[in-house]
Amino acid sequence: MSSTIIFPAQPEQILKGLGKLWTSLGEEEKHQGRPTVLRACAMTLIVATDEADAGFAASQTISELMHEHPARGIVLAVSPDAENDLQARVLAQCWKPFGKAQQICCEQIEITAKPANWQNAAPMLAALTVADLPVIFWCRHQGAVKENACFTDKAAMEAIAKLSTKVIVDTSGMTSPEGVSFLTKWQAKGKLVADLEWTRLTPWREPLAHLFDDATRQNKFATFDTLEIEHTEDNPPIQALYLAGWLSAPCKAKVIFRKATGFGPGIQRVNFRSDEESIEFERTSAECVTLWSSAGRERKYTFGQPNVTALMTEELAVAGFDPAFHMALERARELLA
Image 1 (cartoon, rainbow, N blue to C red):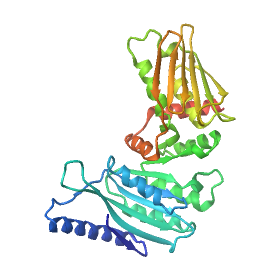
Image 2 (tube, rainbow, N blue to C red):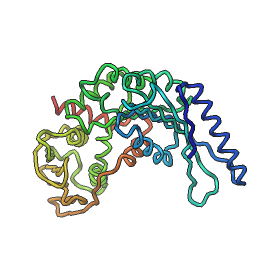
Image 3 (cartoon, rainbow, N blue to C red):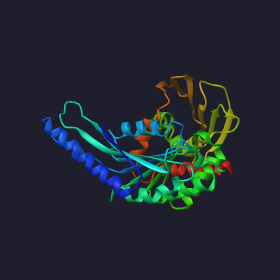
């Protein structure tokens, strides 16, 4: 990994720095008698963060994501400890596929900004996106997604979102009404939105989808008219609303939420009921969920909480509109109302 500091951060200087970086990498490989590096890019991935580590965790995650989703990664770290209003660093993230001699490299740009000035980064970002490729904006800036966000944070997020084809947020720190309201607002602006709390439901959704995708199953999904979801919070978290929305939307099944104790926070148990059959899907340990049916079937599944890299890898694979998520979000709004 090679890097160059650029100050003041200006688009033409950053692009010039990237050009020099690629020239240096090519000459280094040629000098060592190895194949020229392969430059890979399928999107522009912009990450805005106000975490205390000045963007270190976000940069590490981008470098891991590039193996599955090569991109021009741009980390915009907003920190009161920033030395200058806008400062940039360009670097290349390189790796060798197993058994290959040629390196694959992706570009990464790290920009640091003071809180009062990060909205000024949007015009610069517009000049740094890769032409004719998707622009994904992952907002890790917690201050910008709060209901009481200050004007600067709101304006900065708005400006960057306008550049993007998709906006990814994580509503895990919000109440359900706040999260649903936030996503609804951005949908109303015509923006394609995604939520990592929805992505965290995959360990619940996959076994249930496989269960009802079985062509030999006699009791079809539409016959189940009552759904119960147990969770550990005082009020249903947004994850429980998403799961209830996804399961109840097709046939408008009755939904009941209950508070319960369990193994870790969040959803603990899902129960379907029909006149012919009852199905329970429950966390039976910290690492296991068990599915029971009154028809006499029982099946166990490994359960784990995916890390943020796994969540983003899954979310970036959904290039366009996700009908399942948007159906769940729409139904979640109805359940809240």
